[in-house]
Image 1: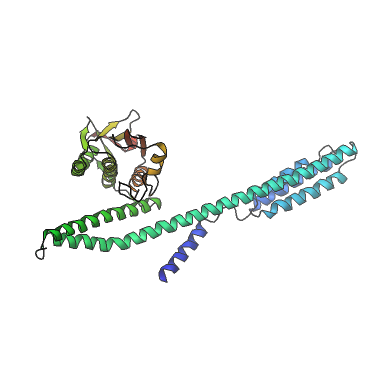
Image 2 (image 1 turned 90 degrees about the vertical axis):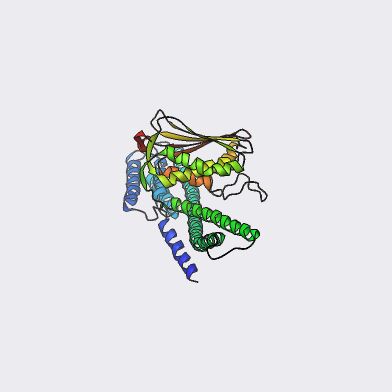
Length: 375
C-alpha cells in the first residue's frame, strides 16, 4: 500500500510538471485581439460601403489560436460576424448593393470556415499534447520501476556472488564432489551476468533522468583499448574469433571518464565477438580526424545488419533477433547505453553495416576532449 501511494504522488507530480504551457490566456493576448477588432472595425466604418468589406475580420478569428479555451475561437467568430454586419450598416453609403451583400456574405463564410479549421487544429494539437504527456508519464513510471527493482535485486545478487565465491574457494570447508563445484561456478557466473545486466539498466535509467555524472580526467585511450582487448581475448578465443591488437602511432590522450570509456569499449568489442562466427576477425583502430576529433573504430566480419536492424539495435531493449530461440543472448541495452555514454561526453556513435558482410561501429570524441600530448 505504501508503494502504491508513492507512485500516485509521483504520477501527480509528473502531470503538474507536464502541464501544457499557455493554459492561461495572457492579458497581452486579449489586448491584441481587442486591438485587431478595433482597427478593422474603424477601417470598415470609415470607408465607403463595400470597399473595406468584412474579410479583414478573419484576422480576429485567427487570434483565437493563442487563447487557452478552444470555445473562444467561436466566440471570436461570432464577434467578427456581428462587426461585419454592423460595418454594413454603419459605413458610408456607396457601392453596388449586390456586390456589397456578396462581399459581406463571403466574409462571414470565411470567418466561420477559419473558425472551424482552427477548432479542428486546436483539438488535434491538444490530443497530441495529451498523448505525449501520457507517453512521458508512462516512460518515467517504467524507468522508475526498473530502477527500483534493480536496486532491490542488487543486494541478494551480491550475496549470491559472494557466498558462492567463498564456497568455491572452500573458505569454510570442502565443497565435496566436482559436480558441486560445477554448480557453484554456474551460480556465480549467472549471478555476475545478472548483476551486469542490472547495472546496465540502472545506467540507462540514470542517463535518461540526467542523473549520471562523469568523473573526468586525462586518460590514455590506447591503454584502455589494449586493456579491454586483453580482458576479452579469452572470450574471443572460446568463440574462435581473432581480435587484432591495437595499432597506430601518436594516439593523443582524452579528457573523459575512464570507467565509462572502458564500458563503451567493452560493449562494442563484446558485441563484435557475439555476432562474429567462428574463424572471424575483429580489429580495433584509433585515429585523429582532420577536424581534431578522436575516433575509435571496431570492425568485424560477422553477420552484419541492414538499416532497419541497425535502428533496432540502438533502441532500448531492441533485439535484432528477438525470437525465443534466438542464438545470441542479451537485453538489448549495450548499444543504447554506449550511445548514451558517448552523448554524455559530447561524442557520437555511428553504425555502418551490411547483411552478411560485417559491421563497423565508430565512436567519436569531440576535439574539445582531445588533450595535447601522446598517451
